[in-house]
Length: 490
Image (cartoon, rainbow, N blue to C red; front, side, top):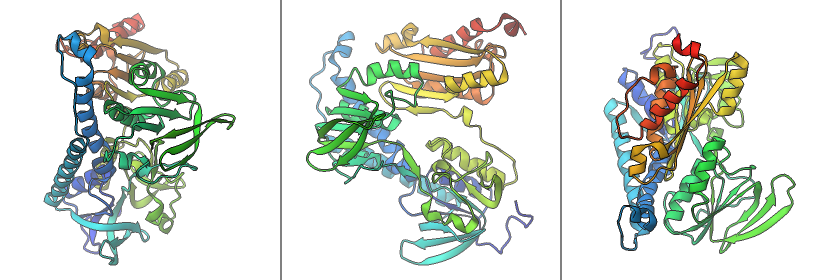
């Protein structure tokens, strides 16, 4: 931090934040709440990707389509002795539900910033050297503002691989998919990460046939292999989804029909030409950093991502750039809304002089399929590597939903929790869950990882019966039983 006083009148603002997604929002609010004169610059809609084109509208679609799936599952309902009439739904009203939710949350977020005293500037922000921010406002006015500290929070956008041509209607990304403008009879989804899986859940529930195309050698490659195996059995094999791994969509041409040229990922030999009604490109996201004029402060990106340390300071050659911070997707650390929010708060705490770093290991992630998938901490591969590096034995236990009274009562007991821990200290290193309400269950383990707690202590904590949380309790108790006896008694 500078030696000059924090509220020096020589600057227009104490803090300027570029980007009003969750990272920028939390940074700006935290700064204003602590008395800093704060401005936030946003070129699109307040709330960024998550509120407008990501987690918020997609959860509204998943909530509605999940109800449709439940009501249409005659076999499941018959298990309760329930016989429902054929389910009917209105696509437009489902889309309206998502749009209304977006509008509500965007309004609430904007009002929250205004109440906190943040100046909202509508326009495109860029750097103009150290402590200087250029902004081209929506009305065309271009001006330069000064700030003691600048936080970059410009987020990310969907990645469209080379060879794929989008038209926003027959070939589109998650940005357009959340609008649910139409229901293609046959939809190809390119990518089987969390975005592809969530939209496959929505579209199949609403009656669409889905072909899932994954370039890597297994479907759901970013998930724990054991979790992916049980989840795929339900979320892919048990639905109207034809999943193909190890094939690359070399070219996609919009139209009626859309033509997809598939080639073998290894050999690049032609495999097949598909003709489908629509294609959703769900191949990940890329940082939005090109327009920031990073060269003015000599910052070089890594594949577009802005390098930062764990205090969220922007780095050049491994050294922090004075007065410059970056948070959220543009840093490429964990491209999740709640990670961005946490980073925003950490950056401001450091600006305020409270030295804080972020702990990525304790940040959970969730995929909101029916049922859900969640994880926190290390993957099994990374945990094995850490065990070899630090010389401890890795413990792995599995806890099954089919042994849980609440899951059985719901007739929804196909689920698994895998817990990773240090067999000597008992420290929880990570967890991976597939099953009913997995997105909520993961928080308990995330808290344990954040505190570096041992299963020895955690196994004695009493859980409500009958609840799904007992899946976690059982895992902790199994872990203690699997530890070295001397370690448990220590």
